Length: 119
Image 1 (cartoon, rainbow, N blue to C red):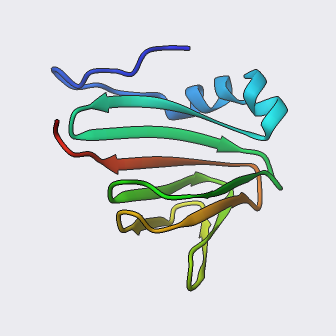
Image 2: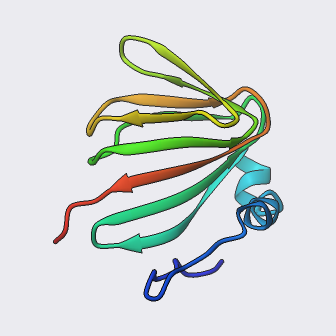
């Protein structure tokens, strides 16, 4: 597994290649989903998540504002008061601390971007 990139001078990613690599990882094969942190900075986290159809991530919450951008497939997020369908190309922004779970409706990949407090 590669270390998160530092954006000094700019950092680029071949998301399709990383997604393909992640789908061969033990965690993906065993759990039905896996994640890789691409950028870890004091004020920003960017994480690529891949999921099999039917896989679920249990209810959780993020300590900061997050965005979920569906890169492929279709995921569903259950929030306290509604369900949000997130097919390919859709972007969802969640406020800090909002409980949600995630389900892969199709084999999917999404980019999770987390705002982060500086230390």
